Image (cartoon, rainbow, N blue to C red; front, side):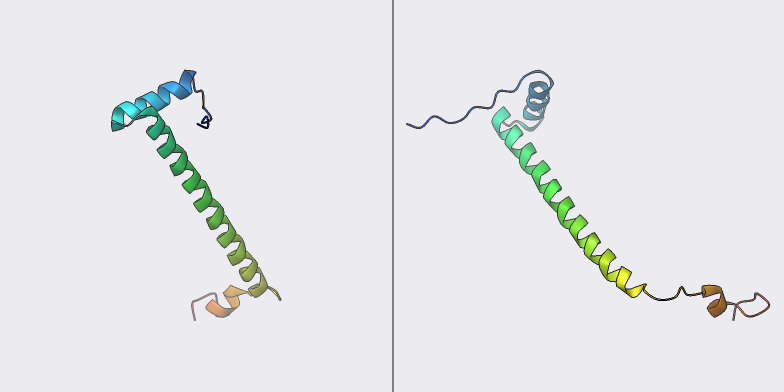
Length: 83
């Protein structure tokens, strides 16, 4: 029979795992597993969101090439009143 690796937790980590296990009625192993899965999921979603934001930023940067637009010239007349 192959030995499974063990994870030794102690101190604050154990207390947090024990508290989650007590609140959920799960074993410490299940509580730690669920917590790790949830954290990994959040990190992967964050990375995907950052990637999407970088892509949008790159696309937007392409649209902004050229001379700056004077919005006041478009929106207001020579007396400063809305057109």
